[in-house]
Length: 522
Image (tube, rainbow, N blue to C red):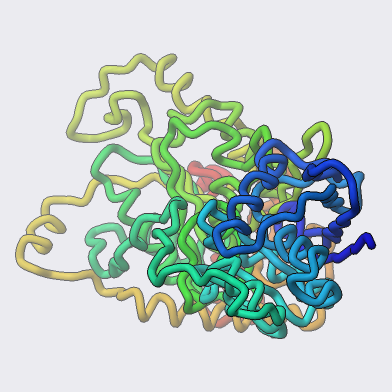
């Protein structure tokens, strides 16, 4: 008599996923294993992996026709993460276990030929999708247990081998071959480098204006562009920005961890609340920066930096089309990548920090160094940063090399007056002040304010404070987008100083960060 058993798995699509019903039917006929339901190449090889894995623990496939169907059949399935679900349904269909038992749980994991259950990319988002779909239990690879347990509200069962899978569902241990201990090898996936060592803001000497701009950037969630000669401290400042940003809440921390899991990066067992920091090299492609891929769509550096900092050093060295691919995601906070047969959406709420030399040789504008570049060469170099991209960057400043006095202080062991701890406290207070002002409005930071919201009576600056902006707009020094963005920065400066509304001084400082000859506007 034919037997059918089913189990469940998850097909990931971006950070979300679809429940996939895996049903196996065993009937009389010529011995054959058939896998149907739009599997890709790696999943199509599951038959040979699962046959060997079952053999290794004494669960041989019957000499009959075994058909495994994956529903919905119209959804393309990628990867080897469905192996455990397929194996569970086969165990049920061959009556090694209760055929109904696997149908209540979600399974994710790859099988080796020796019966081990190996981890795959995306365990954390798969468990999240399973919980959201209503599953109460998820069976995951034992080596991914800590990652899976970051998700609350769902029971996690770690499984190290097909033997443990069968015993979990009630198979007689005496009828199986238990694998030897320590048979599993280390997970062969990419592991991220050690987190960047935390550096203190007080290491920065002689750059008071730049430190002030960094505070404004952190307090309001604004984007930052620093231009200056080599050795002026642009990278040092950018690396200290994550240290003064507020901790993430648990939902955003889970999202950051899920994005890392999708990329196969190390996800620690303890949830990290610190904002991420990504600094791709200028040879990075558009796919590496914003995500994509020819098979499974993967998140890029922009999404991995979501709720943190994306630092592009030597920004003019990036291909212009790569930089311009950031424009729409920076505006919407989300990137949707379309392919012929699928699409995936990822968060893109990173703070962009651009750093650039003023010219190819780096000496343009320096008082003590001669620039070897012609004016046209300088213009072409900086023109690689398009106007529409820079129009989305709220805080722009020139960073000069520290003077001899600062260097002597550094040699004597002196430190800056503002520490990371003090700066972080100021940023937290400014953001809390902004949240109280927003009330029921759906904004977290001043950088998120829309132009319509800025027209509300409670979000207008002091009378006359915007006159400077009006003159800059009339003279064509700023665009309408720039007008709104300067208002947002002015609100951030007011929050840092504990003021109820931006004053003319706050607006003037915000305009200075955007228009370098702002004094000509007055």
